Image (cartoon, rainbow over all chains, first blue to last red; front, side, top):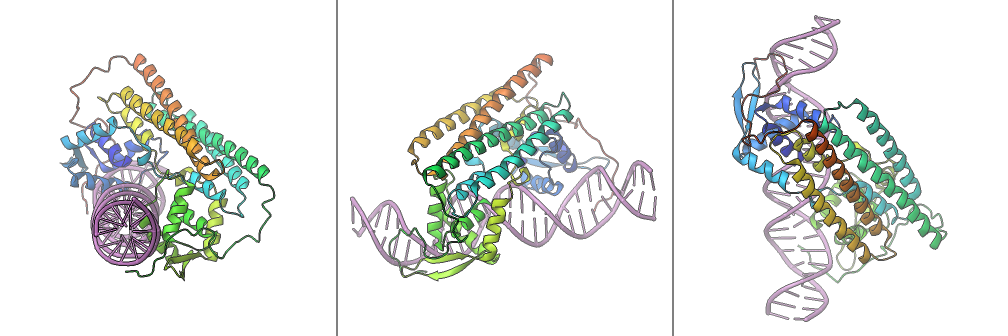
Length: 199
Length: 199
DNA sequence: CGACACATGTAACACGTTACATGATTTG
DNA sequence: CAAATCATGTAACGTGTTACATGTGTCG
């Protein structure tokens, strides 16, 4: 969805061709999210199919241009108007991982948290290093980078918070006793009614 | 990827059947990320195909159980061991939206930022309200909720930051002059070499 | 000439979402 | 009985990722 609308936004500034769109997209996100060229062409195909953009002929150099349609402009401005809601966002893998880690016995949650923390911290340093490379007038790239910085900082704060929480829990419920690694057997939870016939 | 590993983590606690897996998955994420049942079955099929889990017969009530394999356990612990990197994460739609909004003329960026801010603030309030509903001993759900809170707070801070940045830019480069909404025509950017033959 | 960037496309595959089909059991 | 819940699955569709095929122009 982001690519589709991103390309529409670029096309709104005038006809573009595939390779050019990819370059402009990446320049705005500072190649933070590299975009496969193939995807640009398939997305352009879909935009055409959905009536949001149209092929607009080739220039003297053979570049295949696309032009945004009126429907495309409506779609684009609808995108700008409505906020991104949580429902639009994919499940956060890290959150799920920790939710599972604190549940499954035999997992060293604290180690998981600390590995992740170290990794995120390294990424944070990369971002601040990248920020020096970004041109002063390149607002788009700067905002994207700062977004990553803010998110990474929040993640680190959350991880610290998790560690404290887990420590607190492990104090209350003491020795988890290092089991023989795997507990297989009868399921602990089994709510449900009877059922027999199927299909 | 999160679902696959999430189910593996649940299966690591003993054999489960589809419907049960969905219930346990959602209880851990506090139904923050509702999981379609159908997806559980297709994912179980893929786990089977990839040798990470196996059907383990039916019980007297007709429930089709699955069991994690050794390969599945290795995969699961590899997942816990390696941190989720930025490359694993999908592109942030909001970041892309703002990067585009500050670039495309004729878009009221400040309005976009403020709408999003209001929306995220509402979500933040929902989360804190939900947090009161979470049981004291349900650490997994609490951590997930707090993750959402931390992320939302970071987003709001970033949005405020964006607004300040944009205001600063609009001072330097003054009246953007409300153009007739759309600028169509010759592309402004056109780097590239000549090319003629294709296919 | 050979490597590389430019440029357009296709095919295969993985994953997620929604909707649908089917049937049993429980509860009001 | 009717509606809701439990339970298992399939089909269709959208999107994203990777790899491949193909060819031109530039530069060392």
